[in-house]
Image (cartoon, rainbow, N blue to C red; front, side, top):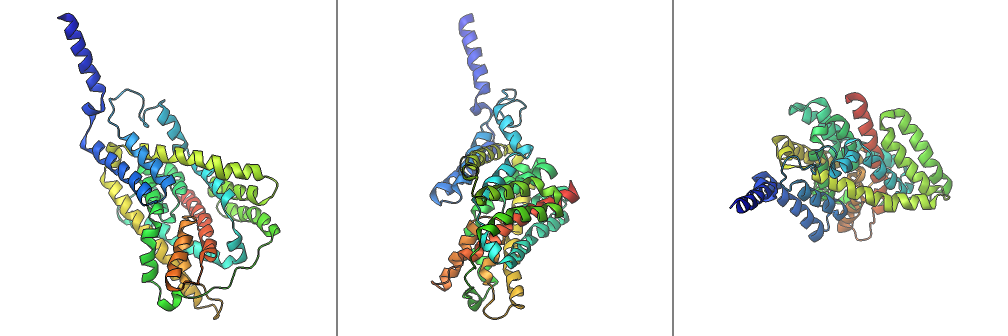
Length: 383
């Protein structure tokens, strides 16, 4: 009898440690959300390299646990907690920017520098969302972290929220990456709303050829100018331009290949999985998370509209034949190259011979620089 009682006690203790005994409705909801992310990535091909790690991370982070097992992402010393340090301490975003720099061709921007203004105009979404978040009761630092979602740049959102609003990082990061994946869905209706049929068929002059010397000088000059203006953006701007210098120098091919290949792939896996795992039900299913998702969508809409409307305004001062197609205004957000592809695809709907991709890459890469500069400005004023 004593032996049987001992077995029953052990079974009862074992059951206390299972997920079945510790599951709540919140856990189930979050697991379903994670599975939806994975489904959208596989079925719709929406940013699968982002949504699959994040979706699976959400599932991992919401497996019901018994306290004290030291496996949760929030338990000091656990494996997930150690990996999550790269998010909390801001190690991963600069490494992502290094890879982005090593894979980015700035030729379209160098050949037509005025496209930089479109990338700058699109950052209005960040500061517009910041003002609205303040009005909704968020603190200045929280509002700044939320507003950066409008830049459509997940690493920048993680970098800034880790310093300004670490408690909101999970919701901000998932929101930023979600809207990056939804670029082809969100942007076209806004682009069509603010343009006329005539404007959508504007044909731009082919970009001029850019010399190798210009390509080599650009990351050095670009870094010096932006870093002197916004020193607080140094970790992101420095790694972005360093990665581009590795690509364009012509003598560091192996380093550039590593940065834009294995390195960025590994960091993308870690950042996606750990950000997803940080969205535990008790921390994520809150009213603030819903407000963050709403503000994120609003900031994205504002950024897209601001880019398109700025081009329309800018065209008032350009001569006929030099005008810019307003459809590339959406590419001012930093979702590279998806936003530029959207510009091209919408343009082809109205003129099958009007290829806008190369033109749209100008404001698109300018948006990468712009979002890093905007993050530096917010960090300088709010940290």
